Image (cartoon, rainbow, N blue to C red; front, side, top):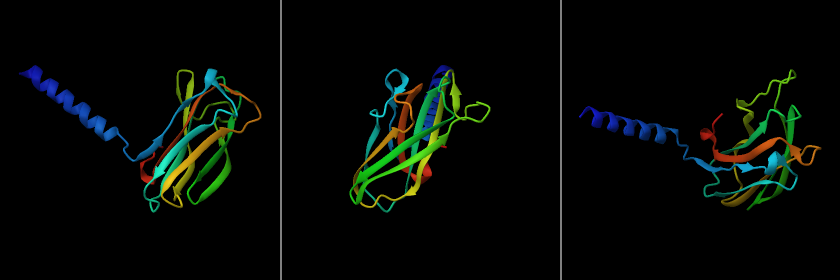
Length: 162
């Protein structure tokens, strides 16, 4: 009897934690692994997001993981978006990845550092339909070494992890 109660309690606990931890408002959560940890100009991170209700606000974030051997304290990227009512628009972003003393700002796990960085907040797509979002590295080095992977998150404004 005790074993059965313990089993039921464990199963219910896992279900509750699993459901509470799910973020069902994410429309897109991509992650692209870079070949041999080299991010080339041609290796664009691409996502297509279907917008059903253009009256809702969305938040877009950029995900990045690099190794401790990454040579720079910053990163430049280009964000391009296109879709119904939105001709192709490209915007350049710079992100600070390390302090002046070399201390990485991302969350570390072993030799990898992870970032979730802001792109657009409270963004309204002009119309309903499919939009293409692309991110490419915009540093002088090509390929940019020691970048493990990069990704895109698109979600309702109040649902993005920080």
